[in-house]
Length: 484
Ligand SMILES: Cc1ncc(COP(=O)(O)O)c(C=O)c1O
Ligand SMILES: N[C@@H](CCOP(=O)(O)O)C(=O)O
Image 1 (cartoon, rainbow, N blue to C red):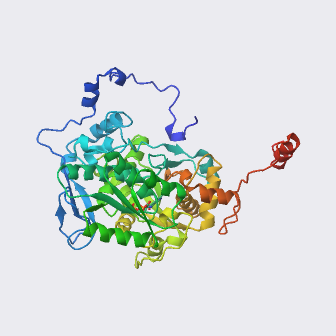
Image 2 (image 1 turned 120 degrees about the vertical axis):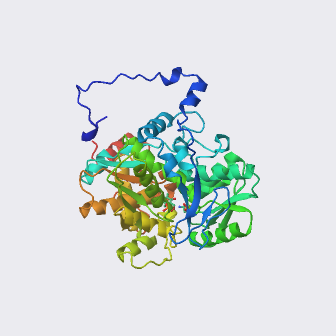
Image 3 (image 1 turned 90 degrees about the horizontal axis):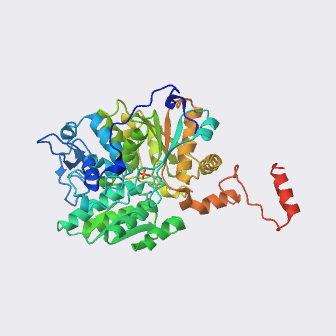
């Protein structure tokens, strides 16, 4: 494989001899011991809920069923950063590197390899993990060249258990629910509103834990692949005659009146898992952060999760800066973009119109304030993409070996615009977050290539050539595509 210039090793560079014993020679007991962090005496890691809004002094234990602070704002999980800083940055890096990808439960998971930074006190036995995370970060060499970029990467969060980044947050939330149920909490089921990915993750993790789940879905607004996931995992699947925002209101009402635990990213436990992808990206770059991260945004929990992950790395001394964040929205569901274009002076929810990026068809994002904080504090930007732009760029990038979902298309389209504007420079190390697997969205991708999407001209369509099983016709077909 070719390597980007700054990752090249000189051919004469001496290869350091490893002094650590080979991992495979260790006994099971030694492997388990190697997964533990050496904590200085008297230091205890802990985390609690605090209010997101600075004028609210709410604090709650993580074992409480609570989603909002006293004044009605969102919560967030606050770690004892002083305790975490008693372990050196080098030790954290070594520990995370040692754990990631191993099979020692649950530490090999991309999320649980960072357990002390996520849910420090949960018993390993309560963790419900599918060894999520550790997704590939691919160097988009050919597509980068098309945009005049030398250092473009795509983080393939959709290469995951249920096919989207939601697994990263759901493992944490369902683990905490399992823990609370074992401690006697009155929780009869876990519920979420969804545009298809949260519901898939929730149903998979609940099924793995043996906990009932209920999903509130906007009728006829999610893909078949997404719909079949909670059906197969045994969730109670409610298909409602409303949109995602309507489902979100209803699930909040139901979970406030009944012993059903809320699993949307409004629940800050989810973000603790999702933030590990930021840490993982830095880890994959040998503990360096990129210049830019481009993230498709809908309910807007994920951009804040990225912000939290990068800030934590910086505060604990593992990196010395945070990347600039760019949120990408579909033009048809763009409340954050509108607020950004107003100079952050006004914000109002919108009625989200139909978009092929159906998982981000959200007009009233729950985490709007979180997203604005993340963007303001990282000198971030927001862009938008039309239906044609998002489908064309996804198809173009697919031709370089990817297989993009439409949401990744939104991010790629915004990346292309930021390049055109010169905001992202040719050698800026840039990571685009691919949030779901393209195979969840085969209907729209197929229609695109058949030229049947009325919103687009399908400039990069690659229609199937249907011909009789005849040598002459095959040769004609290959000639028509300039192969012969
Ligand atoms: C595939 C996909 N991409 C992007 C997003 C946006 O994430 P967030 O809601 O955290 O902004 C979602 C869900 O909303 C999603 O399912
Ligand atoms: N795209 C999401 C929408 C809900 O987001 P959440 O992160 O708040 O659960 C989905 O797949 O449901």
